[in-house]
Picture 1 (cartoon, rainbow over the protein chains, first blue to last red):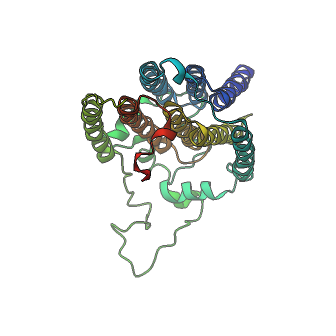
Picture 2 (tube, each protein chain N blue to C red; picture 1 turned 180 degrees about the vertical axis):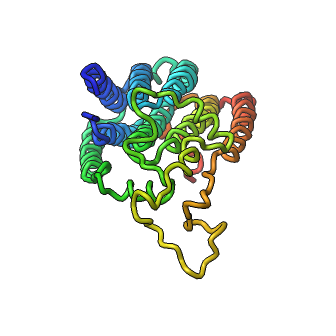
Picture 3 (spheres, chains in turn blue, purple; picture 1 turned 60 degrees about the vertical axis):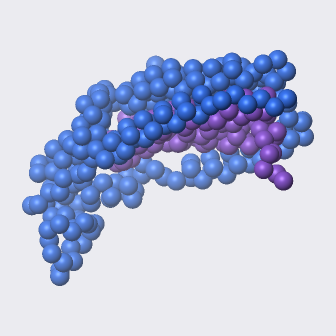
Length: 235
Length: 103
């Protein structure tokens, strides 16, 4: 990773964490919305630094361009006069800050104590056992960050990123097979029993994609119905 | 090859998650609670992308983060509609005033 990416990472990491803390600390809802814009945009830059260009662009378009505009409209429609600042007491703030710091310590110490990228770690054995392809550091080198085609094909249940190298690199030539073949079991069609001569195709995400599209339609209809119900003010 | 391992990204994800949980539990503004939910979902997304880069999770992590983004957009739309209804009925967005079912 070059120095430019290094500087970019630490800059946007600081922006992300600072924006998130500002969302927590601030009492003005308009400033909270602005801090949230900052946080989500910086998170999109972090996605781009991780080689996920399509997800980063989607984060910018959908989150920063869509969801946050929706939230700002909600702020505009509800924050009238004295309701812009709804303060909680100082004791509550101190208590929640203490609990937050302790919770952050627990989560961060747990997460960073795991050796995620160990050379002989469990994750690499899982990779050799299921895909038969040695994945060194992710599925894509850094200089070739184009993931759009593979994402689109995976939504059509085609997985060229996993299935293309199945015949070229059989699993048994690199490492011993981690899933031992049961002698009495039939060799075809059983999950977990993969032999190099009969490669199994990986599954994609066609059905979740369709479910999500129908879900979006239902949500749009429901949101329009909820937002347009009759105004019933009791004063 | 990589000067930055997965741990800094996971730490940022943890910061986003904790800030979101604190924001959800302490804000009295309904829109602020929604912002906390968005922060939590972004922390989870950052973890998904990190594991898709540094572990053999591969493309699946990015697919899951796309689903999370879409579902977060849907959730924000419905929750804002509910918040607007709450504001129409109670003339405030303070969630502590929504105690009609308290008895």
